[in-house]
Amino acid sequence: MTEPKKPAAPAATNAPEGERIAKVLSRAGVASRREAERMIELGQVAVNGKLIDSPALNVTAKDRITVDGKPLAAAEPARLWLYYKPEGLVTSASDEKGRDTVFDHLPEDLPRVMSVGRLDLNSEGLLLLTNDGELKRKLELPSTGWLRKYRVRIKGNPTDPDLEPLRRGITVEGETFQPMIVILDRIQGANAWLTVGLREGKNREIRRAIAAIGLTVNRLIRISYGPFRLGELQPGEVEEVKPRVLRDQLGLDPRSEEDEKPARKVVRSRPDAAGKAAKPGAAPAAKPAARAGWATAAPAKPGGIPPKAKSFVGRSPKPKLPATAPDAAETPAFRRKPVAAKSQTGARGMAPAKSATKPPGKPKPRG
Image 1 (cartoon, rainbow, N blue to C red):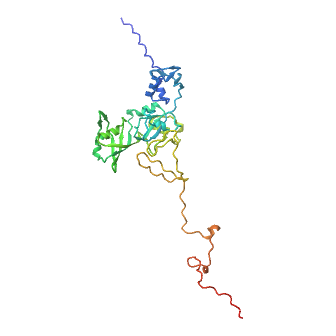
Image 2: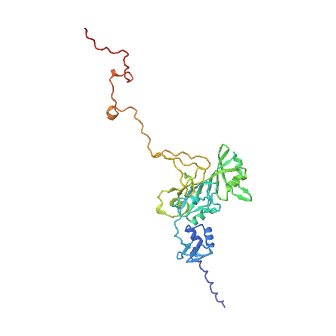
Image 3: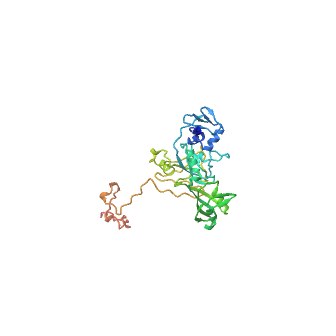
């Protein structure tokens, strides 16, 4: 006798619809996923009128989400900006010590953005900004493997073998740093300039690694992050990456209809001579009157190295004078000078000197 077939096991329940609430908040540009989870735990997020205290919740387009009582805005296309972070600004949304942050000095028309990674207080250079939390997370993952390059000025005159420990990989205070690309560019007085490349972004990695071989970093500028370059940006300037570049480099297709629009560069503030950006609301410094048609010089970069003078723009060069003077027919009447007779002028066109003797007077009549 054949045994009766056992009933088939019930099909596995389908995964819940929608996406995690923290991911939805991140995609809407509210905050990074981790920060969104913290906001949920603090009771700042409500779904369908009820406050939630756990990020373990999936939501769909039908759900009504509010943050601090305000409806969640529709998710915008992912966008990316290049920002020249000046020295002296903190890369965080707020600072417990009251120091200025990069977000205090961004253009006012910029949407809510998040930084991709960080640059420490005393570092400057390229900082990526995005309005999309998922894009931020993707760019920060170590698996991305993007090379980050820095220009580093150090105190001292090292030789190339002195830098070899950095190329092999070094352990500092129990933390192992991956091998770095280190090029000794030039010696400049008591300092030396290096180009350093790395693929991970541990806290103050370059400064700590160089200190471990007995040298001190006194200036650090990030010049590239993967395919994105600092280029000609000046401290405080922001430039948006074209959608076409996002599609080519990241596989995104955010705004194909604007592919051909030029990248827009906006500036809100620039650092002063001490290298610190002006505080919001402060009275702008007086600018000297500039001659029309001439470009004014850019402010000096932090560290005392003046920028290169900008080229002459806006005016055409003065026309060259003709090799020979024009004849009288081509000269305007008001510019013509009468030519004196030769008998009245000397060899150099000067009037003749007066005679020393008096001319004879009229003859007296004879009496």
